[in-house]
Length: 272
Ligand SMILES: [Zn+2]
Ligand SMILES: [Zn+2]
Image (spheres, rainbow, N blue to C red):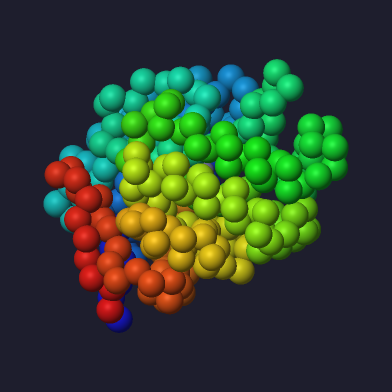
């Protein structure tokens, strides 16, 4: 059974994670990873992610320092979790995760992935109580991701389902939902072929399975997408959370290989 030895999606106490970057590096080494990427959230004026004004700069410099201390034991990469509407310059980063955490509708930015009460409120206020309408809106906006950023990886593609195990805001197995998701897959894959399988919702207790769900993974396979695996780590105890289960799911959905990011680009490794 292969092991996946990279995590490109990690958050530290410079944004909304629990640990320092150094603690994260030490945890990654202890877990046997050969490559670790930091991906601080975009600090957005419309978002309340607890990122101080200089957070991304301070994080960047600290990660550069860690490269000099730990670089002989683990490859350390500088990434960024770009939000569709943040408009930030990301040219200094090794790679970019492209994500959508807020919808833009009715002239306001609508966060949808915070907690059950917030999701409920936004569905009532902006979608007439129709959760499926919100999900369809999410995929429509996500289709435009490549117009905002030349991202390397699509992060947590179906994160709109994050809270749906806790409360069925919409049926994420129904045809109408899957049609909207599949349309986004076929819009995105030709421009950003690499999608992330993300176990962060499992680590944080929202979900019992990784993102994306199996029907979406199967469609990604049909569309020719390539996958990476991360734990969207906000707590170093979960640096490789549920990686074996996620690899099983990826295989079961038809994929024969998985991808690692290197400074020379993505390289594949067969799944066995
Ligand atoms: Zn995210
Ligand atoms: Zn993240």
